[in-house]
Image (cartoon, rainbow, N blue to C red; front, side):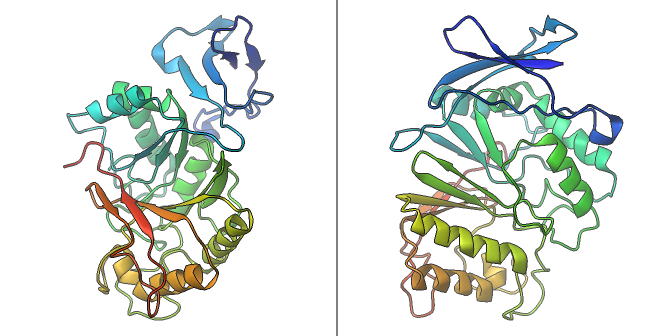
Length: 325
């Protein structure tokens, strides 16, 4: 198996071979490291197996490489999709918008797997990728994806105590293209730059303690190690003078404190800690992209300031569910 990436409108593709060998232990997946591409450029790609270029839609795709410096581009903010739901037209609408990349913040599926068997998690990804509308969307642009509860391990409102977390983490590493996971605590937090935008994606399931625990300074949604990383990422973005910092939070930020709530409301002490950090360190131009609420919403900072005494009004976008009511 090889892949060919060709600049749109050109004739000669660049050919890339797998850097990882397919095996049953890896779910029969291979990965390719595609290098040497031009910035801010359209590319088509196709898969070659046994010397024959595959012609079916699932073996072909398109992407546009990221620009450097000042640029205008679209980002598709997506989440909460179920391949079992009848209306899959939202994916077609995203493809029609031709976004530079898709930022998917959780609930890629609703399989609610509670096992320790990696094959169960692989099967869920396969079911998503085989869907004609959603699969076509993922082949139309670059993707950055972090999970939430239904698509990680344990099902609805899951947290770091779920026994399947190590298995789903392994499968994520095999199946999902991702940026370096620098935290080292089993979470899938990651960050990257596109143009002059810094994107910070946090994993709010793998290291989370149960929301039913009483409020305390140690009750954490991120986990202590990932939170240190997240704060440093904010400082780095501030020091890098990015005009926009986009924080991907797979759960809602705005709600009155409530022990047991699966949103940031159930981790109110930590939410205030983060808001105070943002205010006290002069983190500007930060936008939260949140999901899991199954509603389209926007806040200009009027209702989102949870810093002690105020001073940290954050702009917030909620993606609507792709297929869920």
